[in-house]
Length: 319
Image 1 (tube, one colour):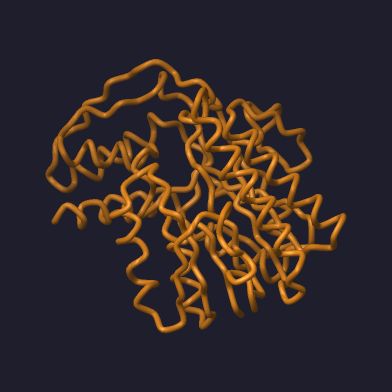
Image 2 (cartoon, helix red, strand yellow):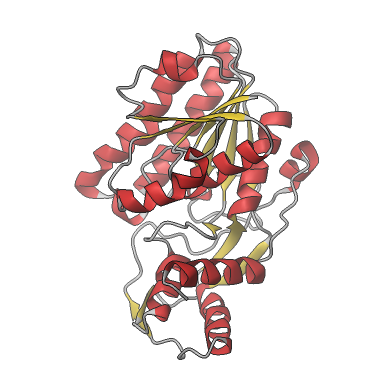
């Protein structure tokens, strides 16, 4: 397949590009290197894909790029690009979220209408659209009630996907990711912050009491879900993608500490600060629909994934 991956230099995007290339597909990666975290980190994440003969990279903003050229010949489009971050989406920064999450998505969809060779557009949505859900595990049938501006923009883009599917027969699928972790995770995300601080023997900052729970999903399981959605997802459909393990932040800290003690490192020093606006108290994915329609089943446990992420960050620090 001829594939396009937006946000190709990011955490999930770069991992997805490598897997598509490994499977024998041709990939065009697009990224604007938004300065939410250092460009050098993203360049490192993109290095393996860049070295592949079937990979082409286009640097640019989806709001200004010649998308006709970018999508020429594309059969699968994986729309990973977004302005990330729940806590940063308030106040004056909201404009960046509407631009990169809503307007960029609408422009991509408009151009995609002109490319009949496209067989599927897979959109990276988020469990943030649910907010503080009314029931757990949460199914796709529950009414979304985001508790952050970030969640609002992800839901708006999701609605655009469904609109273009129903009004213009554009084959779109949206995947609601539940807390993705693993090697290359963004520096602002919890596991990356916790592990990096621990390796530097610094205090770990935890927002709130640490009893908030999440359905953690390893990055390779997210990548597999994207490919399954491209193959099997029905147009306009929405799927929860979760790892199936719901634990509290405090339990995660205990797991990290045990691993670091095994490595001969110090116990964690935790500093608790005020709960952040927009943080949901609990998330838990009902993935029955993804299992039935896509054949999705998470492969990597929380414990195994944590070990991989710790080892990855240790390797970056030279052991």
